[in-house]
Image 1 (cartoon, one colour):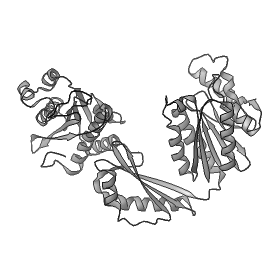
Image 2 (cartoon, rainbow, N blue to C red):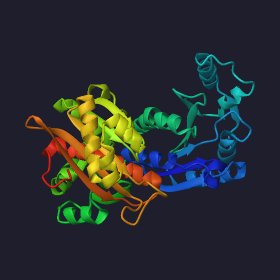
Image 3 (cartoon, rainbow, N blue to C red):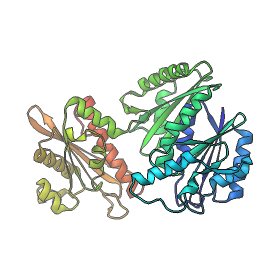
Length: 425
């Protein structure tokens, strides 16, 4: 089935807000056998919204509209859709009750204009919003279906997953079943990924393979199509993804929506290891990612942001002479930081990051993007240490992000392979 996505809001057209809704909706529609053919962004203009909906109904079977369902005067989506579909707006009692209950649960008196959110085009059926005040709804127009959802990403996503997808399942007339698998890779360029998998055989009539750089990772997508059943599409996608993963080896750290920190956290729990982190240029980002996973208290013991030289000395016990001789951004200091955090916390692994994130602070010998990572670990009853230097590129945020990603990758590689003999894990 063909689909169309319409996102509404002046803030999207002006660039003040990044439109993440369209990509999320597109991905979820694909799982339901709906292939988005058009994506449209419209400002808060009644005529423009009505025109966009009219065109969408003419050329797509499934239309998803997000945004413009709030209580303020610029929220005109329902009025515009009623105009496009030549329907009158009615006050839906179930929507009004949902709104009143949501305000009551929050202990807030509903504003005078809150009920305008319950005005929906005649024939619309309410989709419950479990976390926000604005209900969504859908309308069946002949053999077309129009979904209308709030624009707040958190609300929209749960309503797509719990409402839109289940409603689409009841339609029961999908002419194609689509299943997508994603292999998540770190430490290889897009070209290197392609080189590894180029000889993997798959049915090009039923499978599409794509390469998607999402900094600092590269994702390989396997999309399988079947006219038989969803199970058939799932089997085709799984077999192809397994063959691709075999070709890529352990550079694949996860699948689908797995994050590197979730994978590392799971491995630490499974193997019974504990970790502590000492950070400089990343300012606690590594610790934040390690503790973002439920159950992280079982493996994360301590995080220290030793930003200044004095803090490296005072908190981690690093000899000031070492910093004076090699500089705070060096393999020697990264090693000392890793050893210091491991010994002070009694963790199984100590991981450290020190570098120049920029935009200033670089030198000819250590330009912006120079980063050293260190790891301390038990080795036959003694504490061994490895460190390695990298040159990362980009702005401050990108350098900090890829540095934390590399540190997580060090932990993952250690848990898979054990320590290397040449410094880098």
